[in-house]
Image (cartoon, rainbow, N blue to C red; front, side, top):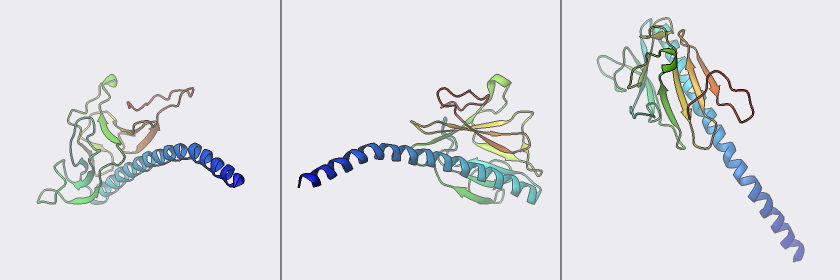
Length: 180
């Protein structure tokens, strides 16, 4: 009986150590998955724009300030509108709202004379797959989740996405940082 009690105590101590680590791992994986889904959506928009030779937009479903794309987004043909099929737009694909309290915000690069006016609810790609409707500025989206290191998705003028991870304490700070 005493041996059984010791085994139960050891299992309890092990679980009390393992469960918080497991929850952190789940949140990190959720954030990485959401960043990968957004990157895939951007690449699909570029591909479709090149395929049809016309503008394709990544459009926010719910344009809430500070979380413009967090309520979900879609890919539509032509210029910004809403995520409904009509005479002007065709929905290519819809993406659901972010889960787990994550936010996805469009960010204006004001220190570098940014030109992405608010509300930042749409990103257009031209028939060559590059950013459309921008003078000479890249676009940034910040993906944040409380208690986790955020991600900044940078869209170059040619439309290619790059994901930057927030620096951990003690690491050298890269030039592009999410504002989470």
